[in-house]
Structures are given as C-alpha cells and as structure tokens.
Image (cartoon, rainbow, N blue to C red):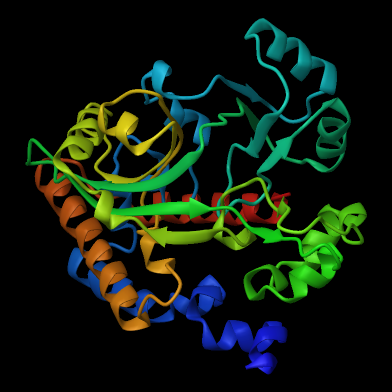
Amino acid sequence: MSIFKNSKFLIQCVNWEYWPWQIFYIPVFFYFLWLALKSRSLFFFFNVNPKIESGGMLIESKKKILDLLPENLIPKTLFFNHPVSKDEIINAMGSLSMHFPIIIKPDYGERGKGVEKIEDSVELTKYLDVNRLNIIIQEFIDYPVELGIFYIRHPDKENGNITSIVKKKLLFIIGDGNSKVKDLIKENPRALIQLKELEKRHPDLMNFIPGKNERIELVSIANHCRGTTFINGNDLISKSLLKVIDDIGKNIEGFFYGRFDIRCKSINDLNEGKNFKILELNGAKSEPAHIYHPGFSLTQAYKVVFDHWNEIYEIARINRNMGILFPSFREGWAAWKKYHHYSKLKN
C-alpha cells in the first residue's frame, strides 16, 4: 500500500482519472472516426454549436463565447490583445471598479493552461513577462460553490437536459503541527502528483510547518489537471435547476452542447436562479466531468463519453438537416492548423 501511496507513477497507473488525456481518449478516437464516417465529414462536430468557432472543439475565443451570454450572468470581464502593459490593464480595471485578486486566462486555451489567480500588480507583471497570447481578465468570484453543469438540447426540441454535474473541491492538505508542507504533500496521493508544479509555484511554502488541523489550500484554480477533486454531483439535478439552466441555454444563439462552469453562493440560490456567475461556457470539447469522481468505473466513464459523442453526432446531423452545412475539409483543416499554432504558444 505504501508503494502505491508514494509513487507518482504507480498512482497514475492504478487510478485512470490521472491518465494523460491522450491515453484515455484512444478508444474515443476510434468511435469519433466511426461517427465521422457516418457523417461523411471529419469535422461534423463544428455543427454542434454553429455560433461557436469549430463548435468549441478545436479553437474558440473565450471572449466571443462570453459575448453570447447575458452580461449580468458573467463576471466583469476585460479583453486585451498581446502585448499589453500592466498599466493598461490596471487603468482598464479601474474603469470597471475591478480590484485584485483577479483571474487571468488566455483567450484561446484549454485544460486550465495559463489560467491564474493574480493577487497584486507584482504577480500581474510576472504573468505578463512570460505571456505570449491575447488574454482575458475577470473579477474573482468568491462564491464558495463551484460546479460544472453539462447541458444538451437538440435543435428540434424546445427544452434541453442536464446530463452531468461535477462539484469541484480544491486541492489542500491538513497540518499536523510537526510536518512541513512538502512532506504532507508526499503523504497525499493527489497532491503528490502535483509536487513538481507546486514546488515551482510556491517554493517558499514547501518548508512551512502548518499548525495542527490547519488547512493549507495548494491551488486556487479548480482544474482537474491541477489536482482539484471532481465529485459526482448528478444528485443535484432537479426540475428547478434544469429550468434555470434551460432558460439560459436555449436563449444562447447557436448553442446546443456544452458545460457551464458556475460559481454560486449555494445550491438553493442556484436553483432559484440567483447569486451565481457563469465563469466559462465550453463547447464541443467539454467533458461530462463527473466521470473523474474518485473510484468511478473506467467502463462506465467510457459509456458516458461515448454517449456524449453520440449526442454531438445527433445534434450536428439535425442542424445539417435544418440547412447548416458541415464545413469543407479546407475549412476544417484551417481550424486545425490554427489550433496547432496556438497550442505551441500557450503559456
């Protein structure tokens, strides 16, 4: 047992939720090819969200997606082309009465890359020194509950459905009054996987000795790749929550499939449609993230992902039958090349 507890490699081997996504998605890729064959288009998924670039699969501007949402439902947001100076950003923040901390992220990005919580102008300067991308800055929403809510609606149906809810629990350790943070991390399998990155981000924290039962939050961004625990929240699906999400989803032009990343004061408030903000809306490459719940069956995870890919196919087919043509191979290939270009530039 101790071998598995202290070996990053073995932890990743025996817990599929830690596998690199390129490994996990190998069977899904072959199912995608089958759906592409049925569609007679490698890029059929563009049609799942016609108003989002590449349907939200390859490359899409987060800013343009946020522009599709009601302004009162999203955090205060600023967009900057690269390069931009610290003073330009701070002046723009002042015009919107935005204050530190803020969230900064690349306009084109995925899996949390380049997303940071910035506490002050010093951290902002450090971020800008290495940034090579257009960026979005958002006010930090400090509501305590963060959820990923997956929503699907067929274009020929009036209402949609919630197919997945994930609750996000940030990575933390609890002090024992004797051990250094680094040693406590080594005793936590989920944190151990993040050790190198944590040492890089928080070098001064590693030798700190927390008090007994003192909680130390190790990350501030709720992303699975950074050690956040994803908890199956499908028990939260209700008629009241569906009505709130459905009223939003079906009023977003050209949107039928994706995941709302939401922060709210409480589940009850969200069910009543109040005290929440949509941090992001992700399209076709969204995952029904409840599958990453610790101990979730690999077989069941593949079933869920395959079912969602089948929904992409069905929505794309319906939209095609309603007159929205699949992209040409040239258009699809151009989007792929753009995606590859931005992948190399990511922070």
